[in-house]
Structures are given as C-alpha cells and as structure tokens.
Amino acid sequence: MHYDIIGDIHGHADALEKLLQKLGYKLSNGIYRHPEKRNVIFLGDYIDRGPKIRETLHIVKNMCDAGNAEAIMGNHEFNAVCFATPNKIEGGYYRKHTFTEINQHFETLKQFKDFKDEWDNLFIPWFKELPLFIEKEDFRAVHACWDNKHIDWLKQHYKGKLTAGFLAKTINDNMSEYHVIEETLKGKEEKLSNGHSFFDKDGVERSECRIIWWQPIENRKNYIDILMCCPTKLENRPIELDECYSYKSDKPVFFGHYWLKGTPKIINRKAICLDYSVAKKGKLVAFKSEYLTNKEPIEKGFDY
Image 1: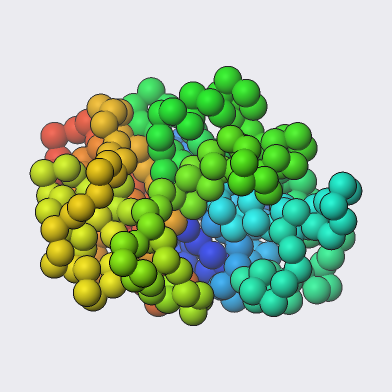
Image 2: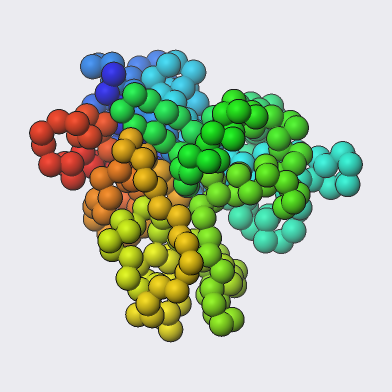
C-alpha cells in the first residue's frame, strides 16, 4: 500500500479538495477514493482558523470511515476535546473558557453555531478516538514530535489513544500524561536564557521556544539552527544548551504543526515536516510514501 501523507489543513477544505484531486483521488458518493487504492494519512489540525472547518471535517472523517484514510490527533483537536469536556472535580472545563482559548477556537465555534449537535455528538467523540500516532512498516506519523520514550509509554499505558482517565490527568503538570501529550502534540521546548522572550503568531508572549528537533546534529551551531521564532539577539549566538532532543531512529517520521514557510524541502531524510502554513497563505503539502524507498530524488515526493 502506498500512502499520501497530508499536513495541517486548518479548515481549508478548498485547498484539501484541490490537493486530493491533484493526487488522483476522485469524489464518489461524497467520499474521495483513489483508483489505484492509495490511502491518505492526515497529520492532525483539521479545525480552527480556516473558512471551511465543517466541510474539512466531513471530507476527512468520510474518508476515514470508508477505509480510504487514517487520521491522527493534532493539538487543536486535543484542545477542542478539553474545551468541550466538563471538569467534574474542579468545575468548569478541562480547557478554561478564557478569552485566549475562546479566541483560538472562535472560527470553529462560529462555523458550528447552527450545527451544535453535530459538533457535540459527532466530531468531539470522533476526536477522542483518533490515535496519537501511526506506525507503518516503512514510516511513522505523529502531529508534532516523535520521541520513542513517550511513544513507548503511550503504547504501554494507553495503547496510543486518549481515554477519559488519560484526559483527566493531562491538566495536571505534575503527571506524566501532561508532559507526554504536550511534547507529542505540541513539540519540545527550551527555556530562553537571560530573560529573552518573543511573541508567537497569536500575539502571546512566550519565554520558552519550540525546538527544531529534526535539525541534523551536524547542522546545529547557533541558536537560529534549533529554535523556532528565534529572538534576533540569539540568532548568531553559539548554542549553550546541555542537551537538545534529536530524532535518531532509522525509520522516517512525518509530522506537521510547525508553520514552515516557502517551498517544501528536506533537511533530514528521517524526519519530514509537512506543515507549510496553508492557514497563513502558504501551501497544503502532501508527500508520497513510495519516494522514501524508490530511486527517485526524495524531494520529488512532495506535492502541493
């Protein structure tokens, strides 16, 4: 079986349909199928930001239900589950309904205003069933970061899926569940030194920065080489961190999440990011799995 792995969609259903059609998928009875029996793997973050969130969810879920795709959980689906789930012990919800949280989900909530039953009883339960990772014979898929330590822990304790008990523990930063879900769905971070901070894409000031964990070790010289949104003052400063996570497996892993820009490229043949900021006028990107092993240049595996 060959796969088309597709990055973060964020409610851009038109871009998704255009990409599926370019990849050879045909719409039949409301479901996209490939005549050569290829399947899609979706890397999470189907909701928020874009103009056609509901349409995106129907496309993805219909393909999954028909056996033509597999979908993993992104941090936005996880956040939506927490936002919708009452905290029966402390009151409120697992994700507090503050201005910041409501603002992040605003487009989704607005677009489901007249379809609340569908949101509450179809999509939220479906999100809860999504796996946190996928492992195939030739590759792996995760939303933000594959750390074997975390993946093995998830397999051992929760069989790689979110459960009610798991969800309840993810809001407590003293629990393993909190740290595993944070890094698997949101990526690894390092605290900036000397009081440095930056503002993220939503205007929130942060003192911890996501790391480019897929950057090959030989390319890690200055902070700009390993920090996303690297503060200007640190860009050309030699790295002083004692340890910074690096993916060391021989099996390739695909992931999204990181809002890359420009033309898709390979910086590490074993760790390939497919999020190229479609929600910020970038590209919705796919990769054809057969290019991992055939004799063609690996960069030809991209499509967008």
